[in-house]
Length: 397
Figure 1 (tube, rainbow, N blue to C red):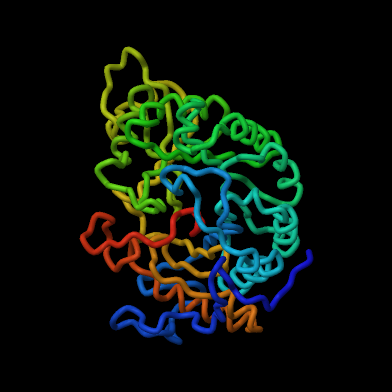
Figure 2: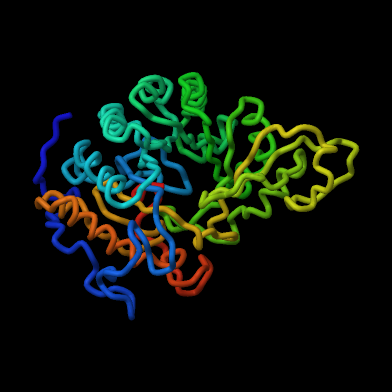
């Protein structure tokens, strides 16, 4: 893999960033700028959590323009030299795995498939870490051409965003007529053995919310694992409102029209999705209501068809058991998806810092991880919540 190191970070039209300040000048009140020497090992924070799940963005670019993520005209992309090279990605992942206790890697974007060296990066990561679970989140456009190569390179499994099975609705949400390409990509991932294939769906009020039962039925019939995600205030247009968001409770109610949900007996173990076993609702049962604990004798509704997950970051947050650390495409550490502070790792790497020094800076950054939603209290509807400047595509999901 050919790379060039020592290139200053540069955003299009901007000035170089030396990366000499990996931590903010003023940490939260009462919090030391550096992690205490007696703090737990690994990527621990002040609230007793430890990050073992690494989300790393390969690019900020995307070939869709989803309404809940990007403006119609797109965003100003990072300059090529600002983005981590393949070699830099492999080194940063190695620091996380070998020195800081990272046990799982998710590659994100933007859209990872637009990166020409994607297969090479995955191959290098697999060679360096033979046992590391490596997954990837993608919109699926172009996946049909690369799924087999990704599997051969060492990708473990894949998540595909799929908000609708109807061409017009899909085009309205993504501003692109690519549903057939996405579906081809999902099928190719399954055929290549990138399972369990997981599908991510964001429900938008008045657009695709009524499709939720049929989307779940379609996924169950094919053996895919569907996860519904509450829309989060991470859209570039800053148009999110809680009033317009479809909540987890509403999702369960919508699904209850055709299905009975019961809690998955497997431990959640820090996963963002709360999982439910799914059974077909018996037509004569007379059971109503969408809550998972109101299903009564679930066995009377027949066998378990599969599972469904609901990620309720807004209304039923799971911040107290968050185990994620994020690296943006230009090598910035984000301790929380909603953080407004970022800590430069790539700048230090390009200045010649040792792995041990980079690990220490990473630990310092994670020690400052907020309690929830970028704050030291829970609540996306709190009066002091401020939406991050970056959209989801620029952060890396």
